Length: 61
Figure 1 (cartoon, rainbow, N blue to C red):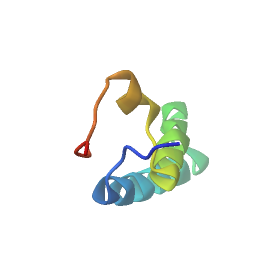
Figure 2 (cartoon, rainbow, N blue to C red):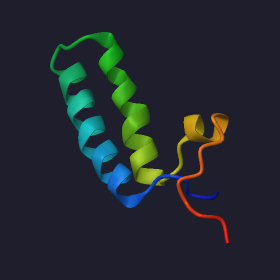
Figure 3 (spheres, rainbow, N blue to C red):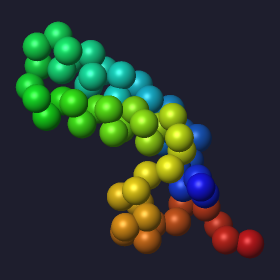
């Protein structure tokens, strides 16, 4: 699988996703479980939404 998330985007996604999941577990709103998707995309470096929108953050050689 080709990566389409930059290193700084991955870092932000990891911390934001961890915060959102912790918030959901601690009694936050149900939509905070979207943090699981954010956390997974940060860990794998691939975002399906970027693919659907045909967003290419890397330059093609």
